Image: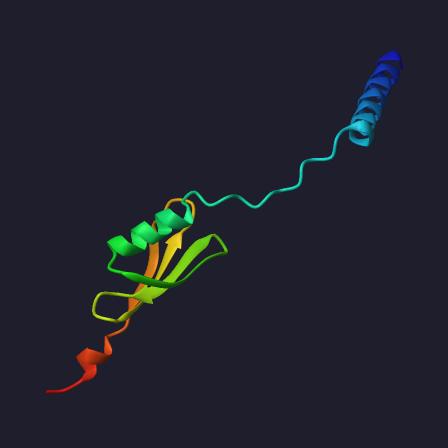
Length: 103
């Protein structure tokens, strides 16, 4: 019987210690949204490297830089970059108005 009482005492002590730790412990820090790994200027440079010469709109949305603008021919370009490392996720380029004209 003494082994059983000792085991019950040990389990009860552990449970009490855990509940005291939870009751008096600090609450975990709230999760903060992570800062993008690349800045807006970096995003502009990457877009420029992919042909965008005039930025019309740039915004950080859901972990992605979304950049809209024009290339040197006037064609609209939309580029989406992963904000933590600058990887191009998506790039769309419309044909410029001059390309639609037929001779």
